[in-house]
Image 1 (cartoon, helix red, strand yellow):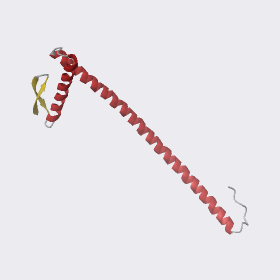
Image 2 (cartoon, rainbow, N blue to C red; image 1 turned 135 degrees about the horizontal axis):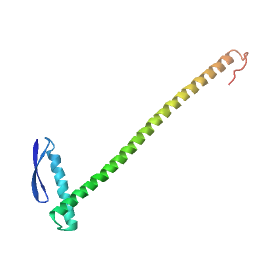
Image 3 (spheres, rainbow, N blue to C red; image 1 turned 180 degrees about the horizontal axis):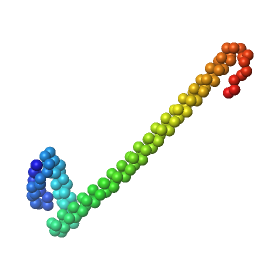
Image 4 (tube, helix red, strand yellow; image 1 turned 30 degrees about the vertical axis):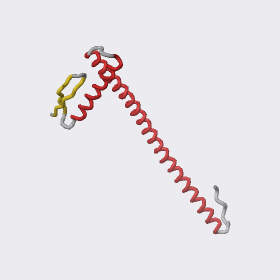
Length: 127
């Protein structure tokens, strides 16, 4: 278990984290500190506890908005994947129909070719 010392709202905290997560925890602390400083710039000195709660709520709101956007993108991605699967199925069906039509056309051309080779003595094929 690793430890990181962070400063938030002028106070120093020793925090535990998983090994390798030290830099991430430090970045999170800087994010909170910057949010507090930003709110102080806007509201002035309204008390440590209140500004910290406002920062926490603001960050929670931003996380909530990001989560909703992510869910919307995931829903859109699922719909696009379903559309792509449907298009692939439609393509396969059309390819099958095209192959059948080409086979039928080939058979007709071969019949016409045979008829022409025999001098047209036989009854003309039904097209």
